[in-house]
Image 1 (cartoon, rainbow, N blue to C red):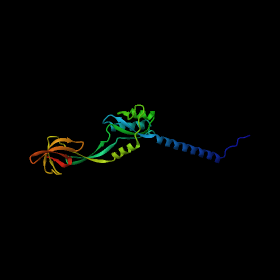
Image 2: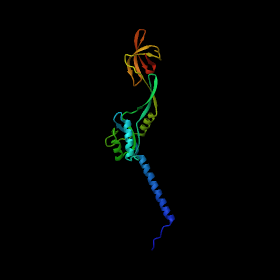
Image 3: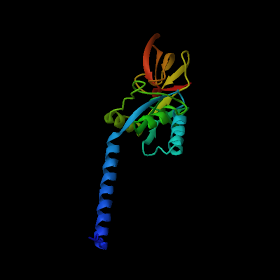
Length: 208
């Protein structure tokens, strides 16, 4: 008995059904991959964070790893400095020595990141890097978009400064200690012939 040939409509229906199955399979694969995508924290040599970012992005492109390694971020914040009466803006790293990498972790992607020049290790055990929590990453990224003001003064213990605001305005003070990380200092102020130590913020003084 001769085999009945398929009609054009039947052939088109079969092709359409195959395309649907392939599309559904591809969508399911993408969803599966997306669920495996996590942020990892990579430790680098101090001062090499931006170099690691550039080197890793080049390796991702060269080694066709764009489907497994998605983003490389160096968390930074904009700091406005007041130095010598002038405002200057610069970028400061939030976590010196660390880089964030969004990726699907497997042997290949691990190898590409781990063997990038400047990378020392993943945060976690040597064999099993630990993904960061999404809530932690959100906090870091939010900090990266913030701008803070930092006042810098070229002063040191023994220098004399004039107080320009606060209860001791117009007094001359002798600096005892300087706390650059807090933009504060301790100084002696002569009140009724007696040396009195006071704590001042940088914005409260001016150099003589």
